[in-house]
Image (cartoon, rainbow, N blue to C red; front, side, top):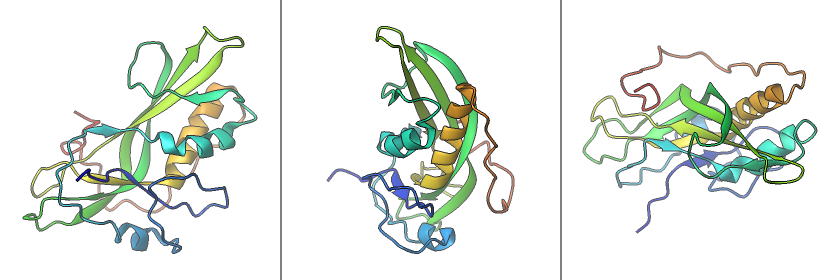
Length: 191
């Protein structure tokens, strides 16, 4: 059986939704959405993830600033012209059936956004990717299964891309209050 990993929580925005492995819930309350993450019972093995299925939403958010935007599927620094740290929100599920912790939410899920330029095309194409890092369970130290908050991902990625393109931008707000500091020891992006 193939594990279903890196599900995408639905957005509360009015933008069109991409076809993703989104949790199909109409309730926009984040805590309620995040409480519905299914425990998969299989170990997560990836320390980082990318979400190409969200590209169409990102592209529509930056269309005026970068009309030729493409998703760069390769996780590499080769050909990269810019890179920046960002954080998104998400919910992690512990898939260890013996662990007492079923999951946790994080308002600081570490990520890198990278910009690439394909000069072999005429006109040159702009490519990007965002690498989102996994977190480990506090009780059993296994990697969690991430459900990313789509709206925070799209806002933060499109903000950085528009800024790099020279557009006038306003930094997206951080929604909610964190219940503690970012746990760098359990974050794969901080290692």
